[in-house]
Amino acid sequence: MSVQNKYNKLSKILIDINNLTDFHLKYEILKKKGSTKATHIRFNFRYIKNSFKTAIKKVEEKLVRGEIFRAIIDEKEYQDSKDSLFEN
Image (cartoon, rainbow, N blue to C red; front, side, top):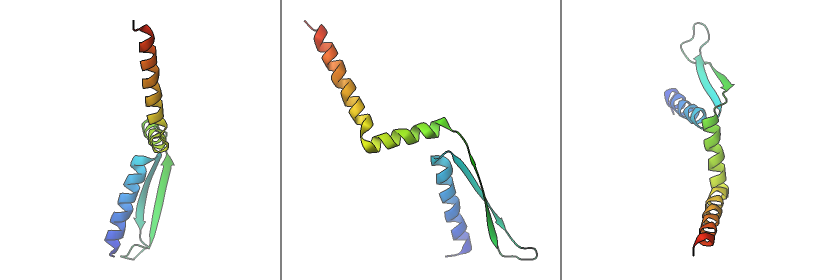
């Protein structure tokens, strides 16, 4: 695998992390003085409170556990029972 392919994979991974988490990561390829080859990678990250990403993540977790489906079913059953009380 070429060095460029490795950087491309790293970029794709960082894009996923940036899109799916509250962290923003980036990297920088460093070279020693006088060298033409990359010798180091510097990673920078910071935490960004992004309520939209956090909300999506929580919904996905609940979907995995089946909690949302249960809540929807419970609400539907509640509405049906409430409606049946007022039917004559």
